[in-house]
Image 1 (cartoon, rainbow, N blue to C red):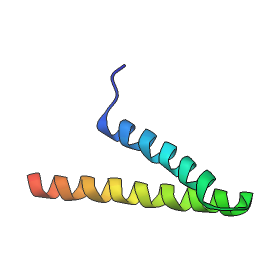
Image 2: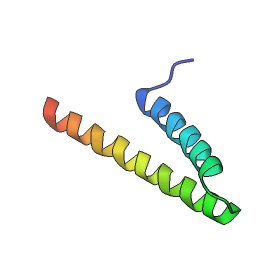
Image 3: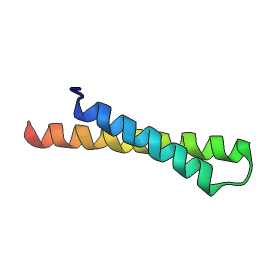
Image 4: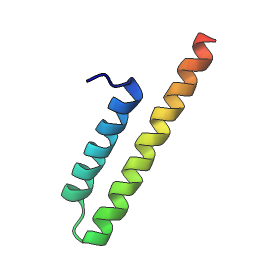
Length: 58
């Protein structure tokens, strides 16, 4: 299986967000909201880091 670094980072972000959401909050609504929030933060960090690396290499 050939996957890109971005795909691997997204799989990690999804898996980690699910685990954080399930283990850290008490109600289902809080779990879902926190999981989505953590996923959004991971996504922002992944894309922000990619832009920083692009600008450094440029």
